[in-house]
Image 1: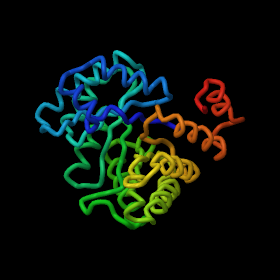
Image 2: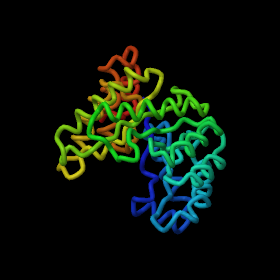
Image 3: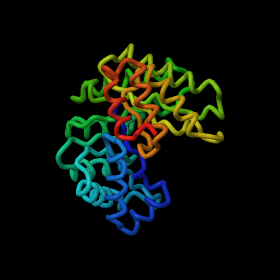
Image 4: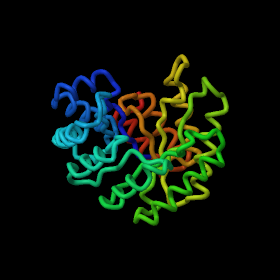
Length: 267
C-alpha cells in the first residue's frame, strides 16, 4: 500500500511558522523523517490562511526545498489551481500527484486539465457542489462522473485515487460503514482506479484516537484500500499497515511484514 505522508501541512502550527519564516531546514528534515519512516509520497500544503496571492510562489519554493532532501515523489496539495500548477512545474524527477479534485463543476475541468497536462495522478474526492453526501450510492455516482470526465481529458482511471471521504464516527456512528462500503463500491464499479483515504478524521472528538484510526485502516485494507494519507512516524499505525496487508493476502510470503520486523518497525 502506498503511504502518503501528511505532516507538511500549514494547518499545523510548526509548519505554518516554517512556511512563513521560509525555514528550509525544518521542511527538509520533516520530509526526510517521513520518508525514513516508510512514506512513498510526501504531501505538501503551504496554505497558511493568509490569502492565496503568494501561495504559488511559496509552493514552488517548498517543492524545491523538499526535493533537496528526498527523492520520493511529492503530492501537491492545494485548493487553488494556480498553486497546483506552480508545484507541478517546480517538481523534478518523479511525477507529482495532485491533491485534489472533486465533482464541483467550477473546479473539475481546471484540475483535471492540469492532471492531463502533467501526466499526474490525482486524488479525487467523493463530493460535489452539494457537499459530502451521506449516501453511498451518491458518492459512487460522483466518482463515476469524475472518472468519465477525466477520461475525456486524457486522465485514465489508473491515475485516479478516489477518496470516499471520512466523516467522524463521533457525529454519526454509521459513517465508518459508509466509508468502507464506498471503498468496496469504487473497486467494483471502477476496477482500474485506485483508492486512498484521509484517515484521521474518523476519530475526531474521541479519546484514544490512534486506536480508532488503526481500526479503520485495517478494515479499509480489507475493503480494497490502495493508499492512505497518514503520519508515517506513527509506528503503531505503520505496524497495522504491514499486518493488515499480510492478513489481506497482499504481501506475498509476508515478506514486507518480516522485513519490517527485522528493521524494528513493528515494535
